[in-house]
Image (cartoon, rainbow, N blue to C red; front, side):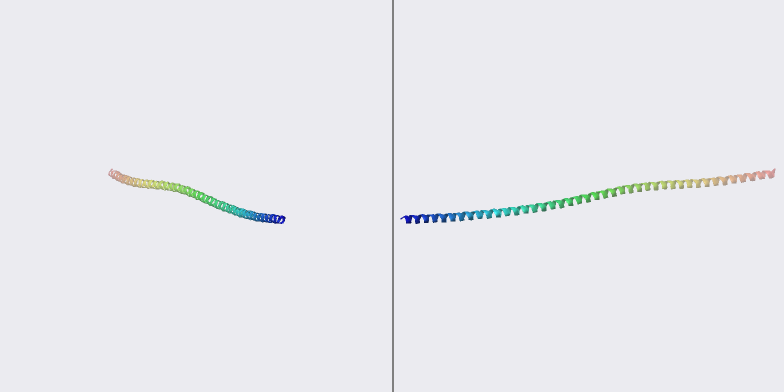
Length: 154
């Protein structure tokens, strides 16, 4: 009986040891599964962090590219505005020069018209003087003829 009790205790101890081994294996499997799950999560979080960092870098690069394009467009627009201003100032200067030339031409035309009027008046004056001189000459001639006749008659 003692032997049977000892065998019973030994069997009970083996069963308890077997349960303990199975529980330890189950706990080890659970710990391994949790560790693998944590490693997978950690890898996923690392991957997400890398993807986020890559997206952030891409967004920064795009933002810098857009900023560069905006700056270039702004500089081009300012250059075009400056060019348009320069052209407008040149057009204003040309218009002022044209106005001066037109006023000069008008003044020269008035001078030429005045000269033509003066020449016409001078021609009329010369014609009148010539006619007066001819009339005076004719009158003097007639008078000299009369005086000559009077002198001959006397």
